[in-house]
Length: 84
Image (cartoon, rainbow, N blue to C red; front, side, top):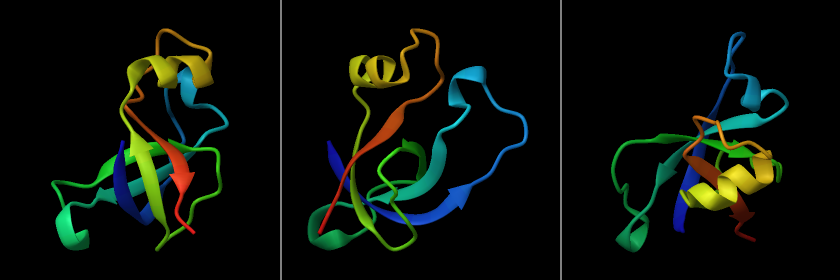
């Protein structure tokens, strides 16, 4: 689990079948003192995160497969919470 900031959305006309219906966010992982920690990543979101929101993301493969109901998905990152 890692804290990240939403920096945008991604739109795709052609995507993997398991991504149908999922909102795609571009998030910047944050490290110590809210400084960038690596390159931005693409994360699926079902919680309604938007630009500027601070979110919690996870790369737990088992959780991703569980919420997507698919063992064959290219998804690595998922939004698991939005900071108040």
